[in-house]
Image 1 (cartoon, rainbow, N blue to C red):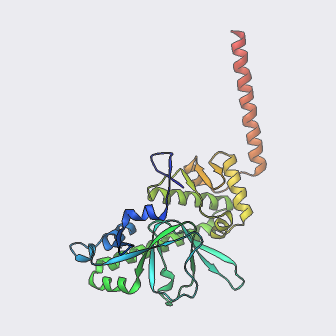
Image 2 (cartoon, rainbow, N blue to C red):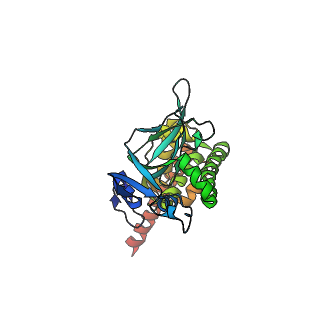
Image 3 (cartoon, helix red, strand yellow):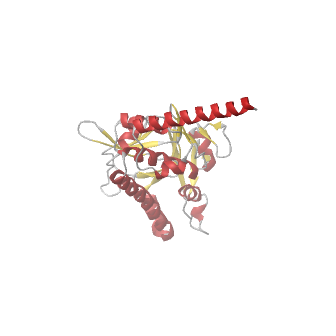
Length: 287
């Protein structure tokens, strides 16, 4: 469930309804042309060329929650563009332990990890029902030879993903546990706003454990930090629904006060409020 940016009313984000915004039916399947694909990736489409219309089409494929899009060791053949839904990409070690690498969502590009070795080195899993656009890599490279501006734009998309990963590495190396959780919520808020959804109220599609794996914290630390942020009034937490109440505070957070300090501050605030109420009552009585 999502919320529109100008309303508190939720609307359904099923793969079918969202995918129809950028696709058309052909032979019982959903397809997008190159202009649709470029629009989704937020890059310019080649102008005045037939490939911007119907001559080059890319197929949509729907995945259910929990389905794998590609697995580790699978031969690399294509890239995937998220048209709707939410996913995670993970590395899995010899003991079966997962390390979450990213949480792709609308407009993100998947599968780039397979370009170098011709095999996927990570696994992509749907966290919700998803609609993905398949981009065969051979077709993309052929288009790039004919339309260099498209090739350069795709390099920009891949670079955008790399910059996001570098920002995550920087965050892991410089922020406290509380700062990491806060920055994660801010990044989600920014992404939802970019997609046209509410940046203030949204659902966490991933588990607390998956968040912890992504930002290098234990499940307990993530849960404890979310509770602390809720306690001081910067966010509201209702199971998987998050409401951001003070985005600037989250964006600038380095370290939260200790639980003891928060408790003392809360008691002091309650005492001050009680004294103020008593003084007001005394003034009314004297009148």
